[in-house]
Length: 263
Image (cartoon, rainbow, N blue to C red; front, side, top):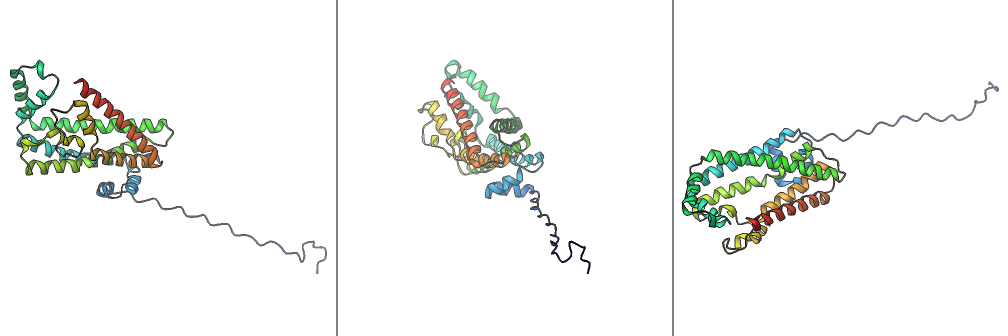
């Protein structure tokens, strides 16, 4: 025995094995375009979380779908509706009707009726793209100003897919063109999904009609999807995203009502 060894007979601590690193949760698989479209309708909460992680070019999917249905509805409308009478009615309902002679109204109706459907469809598509880009930039800046983590790409994807209810509206409009007399349809409120459809346009004040027309089921659907999508884009709860969407929407409604009162 070696008595000089001070450690002899002492219990030495056993070596503790290094803790194995906890495996991180696997990243969700990239969402396919068709799955993104159906998921935006059926399960928007989970779907938008995956959509906003994709490359910004995915926004082309909802935009192209909306454009296709819009172009079809525009072409069908111009072929089935008496465009001359439609333009005459629009002019006569405006505040400028008293300043125009019957000949000038007829000239405007002829000019609009002779315009190619492709011209109207092109500007409808251009307006859609500009609107989506504008809204994406607006919500990006607003949510960024309130300290949320968001970039333009994520905002763009959220806004683009939130516009998908427009495809449903276009399909319903196409159906209405075939099941009703096209010339009896109020083109500006064809789906009758808001309280303004219950009122007579000519006898109702224009500001009130514009306000009630803004309380629309399809607009409410898009507001819901925008709220969910922007919450996913900003990695925040739905409540603050919804507050931003609703406030900005009613600012737009106020501008629309004011313009209706002026013009």
